[in-house]
Length: 307
Image (cartoon, rainbow, N blue to C red):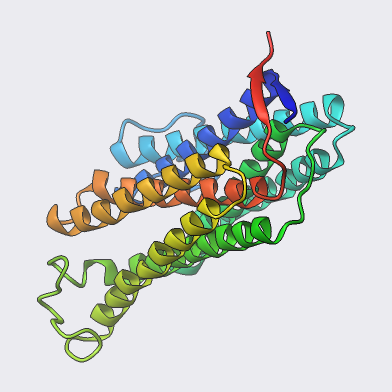
């Protein structure tokens, strides 16, 4: 088994992912506090560099400022990759890809504000943010694998890769349905959990909003079972791979917590903190599963920390 030495670049990639997830968290705070129009113009706030002393303006301005700093970090990482990791063509291509994604995110942010927060743009804004998180997570995985990574082509590994990406996209699907539920106010259509007193028989009683809410709840079962399938395929590998096991366990644990937080949304009557955590845990699971899908492609290697 070969040994991989890590450098500060590897940690930079992790920091970039964490900062981007933090940005999504702040964006969720903007949405749950209805601060999206706290600054009605863009990029300034009421025509000023700094916001007025008003809650929604400060929250929206903080989101924009953190987004700008995150953008600089992502651009900086791309520059460092091209300068000092140019021999790794995969890393270079992925890092370059983050730049247009960043530009699209900024443009969507501008249009979202100028269009006064249409649900479609809000949802697409979140979607591109998740794509950016996925690319950054994959960059992190390749950085930690190093240039001497060895691709494996066994049947067992292929099953793990397939299971990981099925899990990842099923989680993305649940998030898409959840975003639609929020945009249509269906998230508030059921005031009890796990049942729904407004529609005790799913899709039979209640109205359109309750049906959308039930679809979101039932959709959670898909990644729940696919995560079980992922753990099964990892356990059947001829040689144990602790990297994959740890990532899968963390992802599954966060997903279970995310389901509980979803229930807390109803039980707390949609307190802001519960709504924010619901999205944060989902985005984190998505990032971990994207990394798992890439990691499973390559041979298991020991990791040591370089001085």
